Length: 345
Image 1 (cartoon, helix red, strand yellow):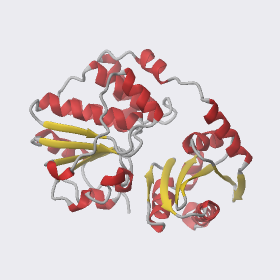
Image 2 (image 1 turned 180 degrees about the vertical axis):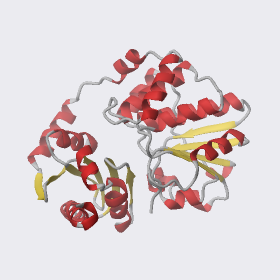
Image 3 (image 1 turned 135 degrees about the vertical axis):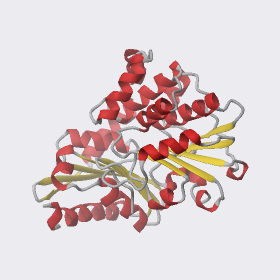
């Protein structure tokens, strides 16, 4: 079960108020493994926020398994010192988890979080697992937001804290990146972006930093994925599957742009672990109300002792299996069953 945009388990404004009143002393901030730009920006912005309001607080940032390539480049550009040191969570009073739909995405920390008697604070824009929300002291979650960075902007505003220019630049990079340059946006997306620009962030300069020509390896991965594609017609929808050794999200996005309603891309990480990346068109979601996170990736992740999560139009999962073909077939069958149920017609 997850928290979705239609039914909040906790009132957003109430949680923001609790966050503003919370007494920070010893804090560790975590995000999902292979952190992207939005996760990097959100963690760093919360780190700076706590240090601004409580300079003597002991605050550490943790990036399990490091950053993805784009986030690594952005961190270097903004001189963000990212330590990949492992920490003992027992040493901290407060654990802040940012931009992480499922505890399984926290790598080596996944199994420890719920067994520690610590204050747990969640800041997110995904549909969250109930076990996260039920164990949290504070949950600032808005699944209608298209990036975690825009929620962080709102937190700064609620606290009446000015956003440092370098932090604002990182946050706007997070928004641009997670919304695919505003292809997906909510009112909060534009409100947050406008606030950051008014605060002095050079939007064009950040946009230029995010521009990165496709590497030859990514171009080849896209072409190989297209060679291996399987096309399925379900009612009036085209659902495609393929497998590749890297760049799953890039491949899935391309397949949607080529005309697929749903794209499922698998990557065999090792002999018994598979990562699945799913994307769907906005029209598909509007017509079916089928959420890739709630209805597909989350249940399939649990079915195979892994995890899954994300958004309605974009989600992922990691499962314990050695058979890519069977996993992809299961995804298609699940989508078919959901589409053919009366409430999805």
